[in-house]
Structures are given as structure tokens and as C-alpha cells.
Length: 294
Figure 1 (cartoon, rainbow, N blue to C red):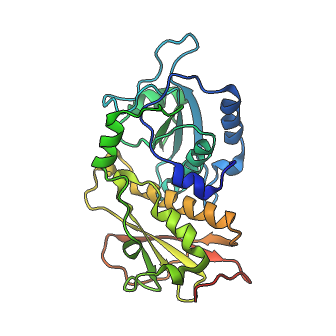
Figure 2 (figure 1 turned 135 degrees about the vertical axis):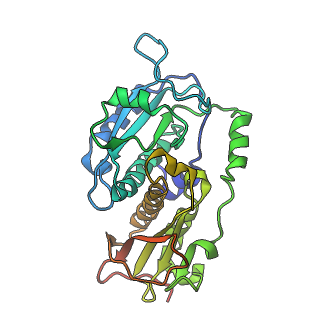
């Protein structure tokens, strides 16, 4: 990525209308090269995802894959399609892996859009030879953003409140779920956490909650499930992907800032607010590392 991760995260937005301009050959091959690197398809805890490039049109320009019946995406040049086993941890891993890819594409000035519910899964499953017990959680169209975005883009962003992000005190906590975390107390982790806050999520629910431990060395990630969430009717828990997205933003930014640490699963057994709140994972500073904010 030529720009900083923070710049790319702040720049990224959903693109639903694309130019007819073919994707540059060098860019296409750069993406294919990215997908051939095992590390890029590996999640927080070693889980893997398979991601494939599918052209929207055939070699002779004939009509290719049809996204679905809703018509929300106009004129994409290609799609990136991910597949994984339908398992709880795998969904978190997929969110991490696929969002890292989307940020890479953003750095190449390609437009993308997380699409989870409004596409024809059967069409894509035939194209990628979906394996037993595998699902296609999400796809993204790929292309160059249309200079003059359609009214639909603006309308959809308004409907899902895409530009309305929850404030710090509703997302980040200090030691427990009773005390909101201040930016001052977050110390050097303020930027990684702010990029979590700005991250995309299904229906912009922002279901992540994060608790910074009292010793300022561990960051605990929680998922607040939305009761009766419509996205879960697809046969998998879509909001687990959102936690992977949040973890990706946090991880890439802290790495860029030189903050060393690693991911673990070690439930601190905090008193959660309700039965909808579930511990997912933690990130801990490496021994000997420190950051200000105490």
C-alpha cells in the first residue's frame, strides 16, 4: 500500500456504481499476486480463506455473473468471492482476511463494496466449485468508482446510517463494562481504536465492544449480538464477520505504528451487560513493550 493504513481506512467507502473502464492489467496481476501469498489469506489464529477473482463479463464481452435481483451494484468489472467453512471462528477469520484484501484494493484505487445479503449465492457457488460444508459469506464487486456516484449510493448510505458512527463511550471501556474509556487513557492505542470505530459493519450495527485492561496491556474484543438480526437468516452469523473487520483495522494500524503484540483467546470473565454480549478474542502487548496512557 502506498498510503498509510490510516489514510486508506479513512478513504475507503462502499462503491456501488462503477465506470466501464477495464481494470488495468498491472493492477489485476497485483491482486492475483496478493492472493497467492499465504499470509494474506491467513486470519488471526491461523485460519484460512479461499478467495477467487471472477470477471463480470466473459472473454468475448458476453454477460457474466449476475449479482442478484436487487440491482444495487451497477457495472462492476469483476468480483472477489470468498469461501470458508461455516464455523464461528472461521467467520471472524474471514472478516479479518477479506477486509485486509479490501483495504489493499482501496490502496490500488479500486472501488469495492461489502455485499453479504443481496446476491445470488448459487451463481457464484457454481463458478468457484463450493466445497462440502463451505459457504460464501460475502463478496465484493471490483472496478473504478464512477466519478458521479448515483443518487442510490447517497440514499443507501443515509438509510443504513453509514456515516453515523457510535461515539467512543458506547464502544470502548476501561477495565470493565461500567467505565467508558477516554482517549487519554487509551494512550498509543487511540489510533488503532479510532480506526475500529470507523470500520464498516453489516447494516452499520457496529456490534463490537472493546475493553482495555486495567494494566493497559490487553485489549478484549466482544461481540454484541443484535437480537433477531435479519442477516443471520442466511444460515450463518454475519455479525462475527464484523468482529474480524474490527480486529483487522486494529491490527494493521497498531502494526504500522510499531506497537508489538499478539492475539490470544483468554476470556477475562468480565461481567457483561446482557446475554447478547459474547467474548471473542484479545490482543496483548508483547513482554517489554509499553505505551503511554496510564
